[in-house]
Length: 407
Image 1 (cartoon, rainbow, N blue to C red):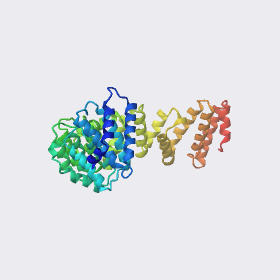
Image 2 (image 1 turned 60 degrees about the vertical axis):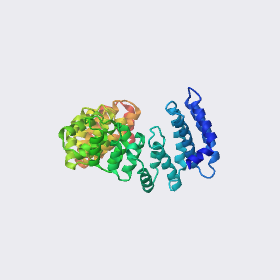
Image 3 (image 1 turned 90 degrees about the vertical axis):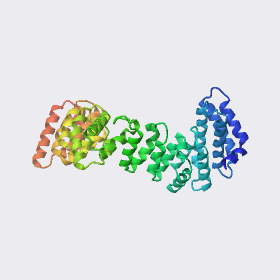
Image 4 (image 1 turned 120 degrees about the vertical axis):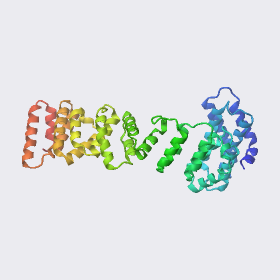
């Protein structure tokens, strides 16, 4: 199909090909103009089927670059065109049309041995939008290829498709048959899919087979998956320690929860006790501070939370959400612990000597009143308020703010 369509569009394809290779220097703007011209030529042929001329054009231009051995010299230019045309193809591809699937897989198989072929990457982009039955059809067609003759780029995509349809051994064999090793980036989709399916034993095997000489902290973009694998599958104390030492380099609560999802609650709480002092040393880092605040709330460390507010809350006017939620929880569950926090924040706000700070201080005093319940407690609050008014009686704007609230 695509070959015959390419023949029908041969003059247009040849024109685009010559435009791509005609100049020694080509800017992105020039490539955009060439691509737009190609799209106009394609649109003339798209009256009955939008996908056919797109496939045919990519096929035709690549076929010329391959036959004339010009691909390597102008690779960036060809890829620009192929990616742009495939973006259009992704919009119109009819995945329930067997003719489209056959055409796409035929072109992929035709150049199965050619490393420069754009078809593996194009196929990969389309599998993201396919139903599982359509991917299974693609897999069945790919089995006709001699695995050992696969190009590296096709082996990567074929392997990924094999995982999707549950053929994990085939997926690994396709990769180990290749003479050269793979980068973490190339295989990240594979490992991510295995992780999503909780295939921990398979992941352990893949790390050992594909990265046999890597040390535990040298897996690049796959490091988070390796670390989670170790928390789920390994009892080696040295490995566990190295995982959390790496985590402390860039503390993040969401990442912590991912690593802990395989642990028993008792193990998780013990780990929190171990890591909290380390987080305290890193409170100058925003993400570490946010994580610390979330832990104080989640694990109800309200005594620690009180000390945290008293030592570190220097600007109560602009508290982030994590702190607000933590303070609300302390107020509801441990009101006695919340009192000194509000006392200190009120004083710090008033000392700023601005209208907006006075307003916030008055609001906190209103909150503080709710923490004193019962006749004796109410008397204590009145004593605090009287003392506060006396101490700041010369702060007229603040005194006016206090008059605005019903105390």
